Image 1: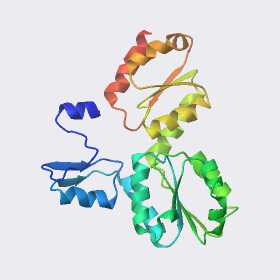
Image 2: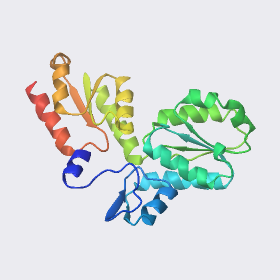
Image 3: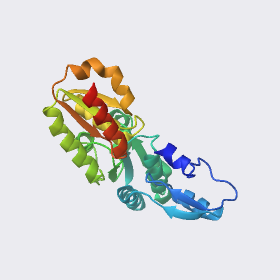
Length: 244
């Protein structure tokens, strides 16, 4: 999709110029308040396309930080959505160290003494995280926190997609997950399904050739996709599966 947009003249920029012309779009992952101000300062017309659910996580994290909670963000430390949530929360916190990103339970165990010492602990999640991770964290934190406030900010469509895909996986010999291997929600989906049945994660139909034997040995094949996977790619995968 990025390639198609590029062909249409919509370029991706990774740093802001001193002077900009035209429209600058904030992508669905969102950005920090600082970036919004910089975009306008250098002269771009700003269009904010931050996902509504992502904006909700940012607001929840900022509210917790303003109320002096030790804020824990469950998600990928290097994911752009999480970076934006973290940056916005840190701007509202009296101490930036009171905002912490945890990619897994081990990351929380490393700061257990800090968590125990915090008067209040607040939790938000990257929108594409799994409910299983949330339950695991709540079970752990509820035993060591003085006060714990959990905001379930998992995207509803992500939860629904995972739930429906699980049902399909239980009826399938093989699940094919279509979508970017850099996409958090797609990789989480593949991980969840791999615990139920044989699962392959591909980005485009040509990759199916690598799994020809597995596909031919499977009687029931289920296909699902990440939230940002275009219908055109999914349809190409379905067409390819019919002829293998």
